[in-house]
Amino acid sequence: MKIWRINNGKAFHKPHTLSSEDTERLRSLGIRGQLQENWGKMELHLIPPSHPDDIVTIAGDIYFPFGLRWVPLLTEKALQVLEDLTTQQIQLFPCRLMGDEIDLYAVSVINHIDNCIRWDQAAEIEHWRNSTKLKRIHPLVLSAESVRSPHIFMLTEWLTSGVYVSDEFKDAVERNQLTGLTFQPIEVV
Image (cartoon, rainbow, N blue to C red; front, side, top):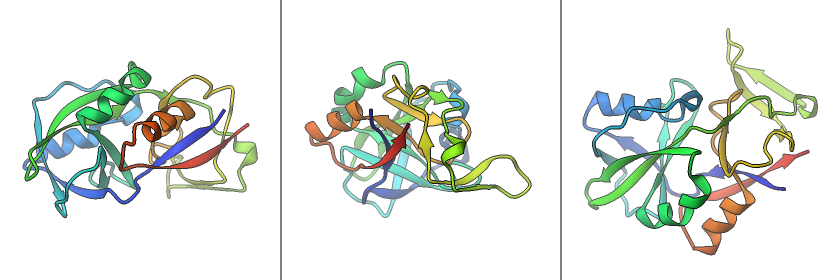
């Protein structure tokens, strides 16, 4: 079994929304696996503007108050390819990429896994100052028992670490030539 952390490749953009309400909505995605209220189509402006790949990413500190987090944005093509693998593990929100006039879906990963980090394998562990929240762990090793079935998930203990996917998810992206993502292997024991 292999697990992969999604990296942003070269499609890492800073989002701009037209309202503070929309910015707060983006910040709420993926937090502790909570379902969010649906919203109408949100206008997004990417800085710098560029033609999007099949999967583009929103980056930055505006999404989470500390650390670096990002939200996957899926085109219709990417959604069709990945839908069977991600049903019940994500929540989708309609967005419109202005300038290029492209419909996208912001992804909130609601599948969060508890107690899957192998703490005994870590050489370095760092927490945020005055907090029990994890800032950094090296190397990151996950428990095979805990991550054996999900295709997309986040770690409850380390909310700023990103999104993790199965080998099947990675294969579907590569087989269908979806662009915009790279994958970093994560050790699983």
